[in-house]
Image 1 (spheres, protein in one colour):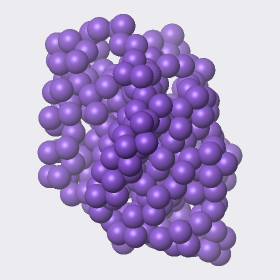
Image 2: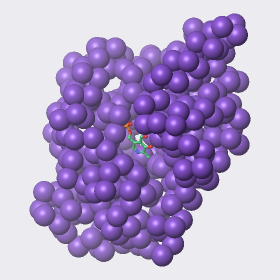
Image 3: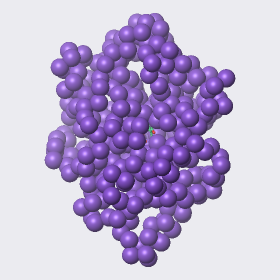
Length: 321
Ligand SMILES: Cc1ncc(COP(=O)(O)O)c(C=O)c1O
């Protein structure tokens, strides 16, 4: 696999990899759970998007970009990390968010503002028309905008997770920790595509379980499958790992906190002092509980913590009770 894709430094790597002994005992399902702490990537309270943005920003700078333009949900972790990364790279930042300004303020929206991003409210779930307009307006003003699609899930962005797999595999080898399965939150498919390329290249034989937070398994496989192929081609990787998506944990829909997410947040917080978020990692951990309790996970299981914890502060009403 190519290892020379240009990157812009946003994180001090590697992120920690460690066991969760009290959490594994609490789960009591015969599995030993470990965490890969991508909630501790360096900027902006961390998260998986910084790994993608390192490569996307290098590409933007190579094209002479002056501004980043991206999009997401109101409480988008991707937009928050893009805003911080743009600040560090000396670029302007425009984020196009679904919904209205007062739908769910605080959390990531507050941080978008602190990092100096200009927020554009789409007023609807479809942000593409407004994103296109923002790009055109910046062009007309003589700027050089660089558009980053939802989640930064392009082959260049997903490459960040192929390299992340290699980082984790090296740590696991040093620690003598062979994993039987990996569980993580999947949505726009970029993290999953990158992991599939890294694990394939590595010849790993365990299972990668993507817990969907919003899409049906079929839809996500349609997103992640071609992205995996394109990322493998970009990186000249020889093999890819199968894409497995679980869509049984969608509960009340995207961003709706139910009892499984609450249980997951409280269990990890009270056994290990580690936070997961209400939208992504809480749902993925709830999926891990269920798969483990039903006997679908065995041995040593890696929970790949993809971040998202600032969104906790936008869900006070649901979580404080
Ligand atoms: C905390 C967190 N975990 C997981 C994901 C899913 O990553 P991907 O969009 O690459 O599927 C996201 C995406 O926004 C996220 O914010």
